[in-house]
Image (cartoon, rainbow over all chains, first blue to last red; front, side, top):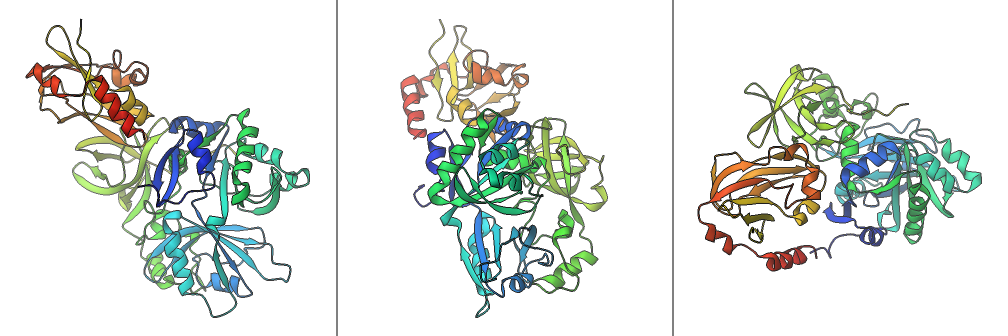
Length: 374
Length: 128
């Protein structure tokens, strides 16, 4: 039953190192190697490395590439200079298709602009189909490089020293000096890589893209170099608990096709004024007419976990729905993100969540649940 | 001497004691498969359960699982401290990690469960 699943270039490593492999968005991926809690805490305290090769990696190249993306993305391309990354949504007239990271790479030698778009695995095919349907006759070439490269996230307080230590000496200072949401090219463990100071854990760190042929070698070099610092390989289970603690939305949970981005704290991803992109007027109406429910954090007294779809109550009155929930290892108790009636989405409000017919008491807290020390 | 353990397909173990009661827990394989246990809801003492009925739950970071009664009977007692030291389930699932003691309606029902050999074969199949 697993032979139809995509595998990443690192799958043999996961199999050889006790990865518990699951089907995630059509990919055979490790959910954990040993313990999600241990992997989570290693990332908070030292470093974690994650195979995120299932994420979609697209390139947009051509003289019209910047203008074309400007006409399609919710975030303006103005100010996205070479080496900059920016969080954006990909929308149609009717729906939010995905959230994505757009980045501007160095122009080609003839001056042609080159950009990258990293999209969720679960949405890659439909985002590619949507973008293809909007391609102009000339001036933009769209390509999907997901299967030609691997992507490795190294995250945590010691991530930068581990990665910089593997860079060619002439690259190390530049990589170490990357500002948040910027990117560069560098040689890592002897191989050409694209490195961005980005991630999805609430920690400092990088995401590294390398060709398939060298993926295992680069992965093992990072794993070996980081071991003495406390680095661990982490599965998607820890990635999910880390992003939940960091209050980051996940497509399909907090963020959905019919989401109001302003209600879930993604207003910063919406550059509406003086722009035109699919659904722009619909989002403009959302901005002027605030939604009845907004995203909020909940913490619980118990480790019994409220999960997606559970109902949030005050007394017997329904006031919201849980979008993600888990035991949060750094917080030490169960937490959740929920869409709550605006009037009660105020820190301190006492609520119950109906967890399999039993009320679990908790309270509204500000997001994120965890913020790293500066 | 207590009888050997028997197992349900759903990975609970049960052992008939000399006094005619039976002790129930979950297998080492189940604990290992769950990992990262965070919460346990013990069975309700005094309740009568039917074989295959959920009478407790065990929750890991990833998911919650029901604990099913391997045979029908009345719940006589539970391991009250276990939810506070869930690590016992991993360290000693067949003694310190016991979950509930029941009085089986019909002790002969245990014979219909898997013996050690059959259970070992089941988990060998599930791990591959």
